[in-house]
Length: 322
Image 1 (cartoon, rainbow, N blue to C red):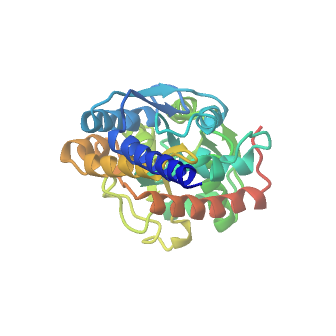
Image 2 (cartoon, rainbow, N blue to C red; image 1 turned 30 degrees about the horizontal axis):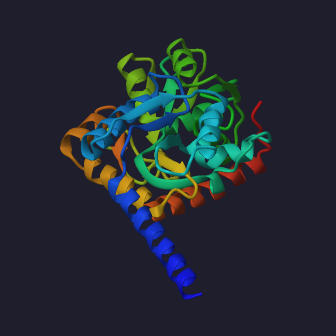
């Protein structure tokens, strides 16, 4: 029995040493970073900064790989079925990570158990905006306008997206009704705002900046506790007495569940150091994003809190993806 016991002990020690070495030596080959949307969108912009940071600091190519479809669910399914070795990652938005499971009855996986949270990348509020043709110059004007009896419509990048859910909360808060027009993604939605097809919406800062530069919208409020650096002249909802509308969204990085903790930690720490560098932070800020890296445990807690909040909104308002 002693030789057998010694052999088992040696095998266990070799396994432990192998795991430690694999984390130390990671990555030993190129890494795929999935995104759930077509090139040219928000995830593509953030993804370029991400893969540049990881490639330069870890000495292996990190490749951004777009897998659009199902509001990010297709890329999520690919990640859920990928080997848990750190060589397939997913640059994920809040919708895919915490909202979609409540929206879609056909998902083959649950992000709460299929994903290993690595880090947040950027975090940002939403911007309440109105089309330039709407006779509104401030949030208080907007409140008066929605109660004036005008027939209203508002847009979003899709059913169940955070702009859609935020608009639902605003309708509840102010007690008015507006027809929701759901577009198939950020591109068509932004084009609709440019063409005055819809009157108001919530939007991410990068998209609002582009619309402001085109003189297509006015920004009325930022869904944050304080003013947002990219919009210093736009009041926060707390300033406006609407603190219950503090809402933020984020993009983060996840790995398959059961990815070794040491590898997850190494990726997270590398991104934290890289995104703290002035050059990387400046690339993100000039597009309206605020770097906001977190530890894996902090990331998991944020995912869980947002999953509880937004799943409740989806359920309460009987919202289902079409």
